[in-house]
Image (cartoon, rainbow, N blue to C red):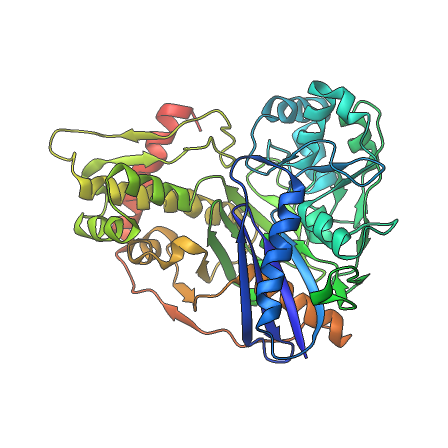
Length: 470
């Protein structure tokens, strides 16, 4: 029997079909999404159908179950007819930064962290709904229910039933859910939306079913898993265990670990999410990761392979250049209006090699700060598992061990978010008490000079403090 996992990310939908028992991938499909920080949710449905059809066409047997993992936080507000009232606001849309600050000022950071596990920033669904109520009240009046991207796709696969479904993991990133109790906090939602009280999805258990797929031939009758957020699916797909911190270098950068107890960090650095197994997923997110490397490559008139070559020709510290890579503002630290800064420029260090090195170091320093924040929140860090598109960079692999200060392993290349969704689907299909254990192969990055890493991070912190005071 085969299962299908869907990763509806910022940039594309990936569909992976795997053997339910072993996790062996037998077919894949992919379809692109529109660019921008607000997107018509129907575009995700079109892309999902395309990617699923590609994968199903090469599947050698029946697909028994499917689960959807989606980008976290996205605001999908739909009317009573089931149509979005406006384009969805994505996690990386920072227009709701004033509403985030107002919510924290009103309730207090400590209270928000205690109730929701996190201090909301512009990424969170709650702040986007507050923005909607303030700036587009005529549309806010039409909202019948609020969904997340993965909820939306699962709901459509199920034929838009009366009740929509979600899971603890993705719900914990909204800003109106209590991870410690597993319950919605409708009072926070209603207050943010000026007294409006839209319907919210039912929160399923990690191995719960959202029904069966209907109306779409390739999956007709297949069991539907609860689905989850992309980071939760990534942790499930990679099989993260005690002492493992997963650092994902995609469009955004994330550092997260599976924990047995909920966290509540009133500084706002660590988001206290739930995971996809019934446990918790303390997480730190940066807005800028792989895009830093692609942007630097474009600036230097080369491609990513060329950027690697240049960066590896430069010495650690990039000749004194330090890049604060806040190309799209930043979430951690909370600097939504910041721009990128290249500091320490002198006549002798203005070389392509040093700029390439500074881009790699700057991107990784932000994530290394994230790993430190997890440590401060009580997470044990024995090793870093590096995943995501930018983890394939030779320069990233060379620099990462020195900056993270622990062994760094690179799991074999795979679509771990889609695989995590497929593993959840296999769990639902089996009815077992725990998800299946699929083999993970990885390789270790070569050890690096920790002293050099300390010097690079010191320069990064000094530059950030001087320019932003944090």
